[in-house]
Length: 236
Image (cartoon, rainbow, N blue to C red; front, top):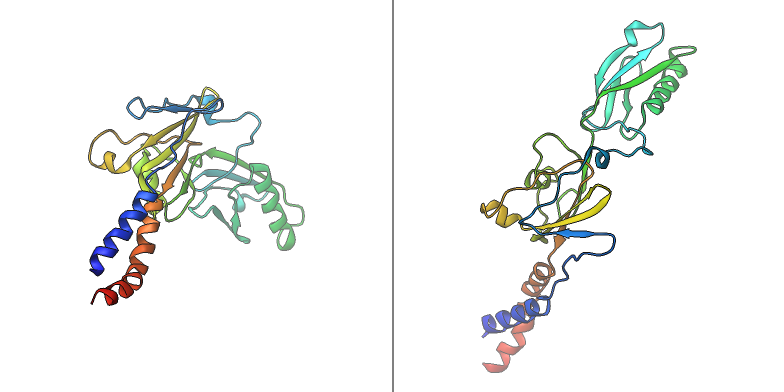
C-alpha cells in the first residue's frame, strides 16, 4: 500500500510538470533546427570593434620594462588569470587590457623597486576567447575556447551536469552575421550517436535547462513515506 501511494504521488507530480516551455523564434532570435545545426560565426561575429582586447587565461603576453632587461620577458597567463613577475610576484591579468596590465605592473614596481618604471604590455597570442556556460552545470562560468571544442567538451569543462540538469534541453546561443540564433540540443542523444556533437565557438552561450521533474521527484521521494504512513495505518 505504501508503495502504491508513493507511485501515485510521483506520477501526479510528473504529470503536473509535463508541460515545458520551449524556446521559440522572435524578432530578435532565430531558432535553428537541430538537424540543420547552427551556422558558423564569421570573423566579425567573433570580435567587436568597440570592445578592447582583454587578457585572459592561457594568453601569451610580452612585458617590456624600459631599461631593465631582467624584467623584460614573454609570459603565459596561467589558468587562474595571473602572471608571475620577478620582484612583485603574482599579478592578476584576467579581464585587463594590455595598457591596464602595464599600469598595474608599473604601480607594483614603483611602490618598492623602481623609481619611474615604464612598462609596455603586448598580447602576442590569445586563446582567451571564451564560451559562457550557464544553467544546470556544476561550475557555471566563462571558459576558454580552444580548437575542437564541442558542446559535450564545453559541459565537461564546467564539471558536467548538475543534479537537476535537463539533458534534452541544452541551448546554444550564437551571433551569426549580426543575427542572434539559438539551437536546442539533446546531449543524451548526442552521446548515443544520434547526431554529431556540435562545435562551440568564441562568444557562444551554452545554457543547460532545469528539470522541474527531477526536483519534484526528489521532493516527493523524500516526503512520500511520511504521507503514506497515515494511509497505511488506516487500512490495517
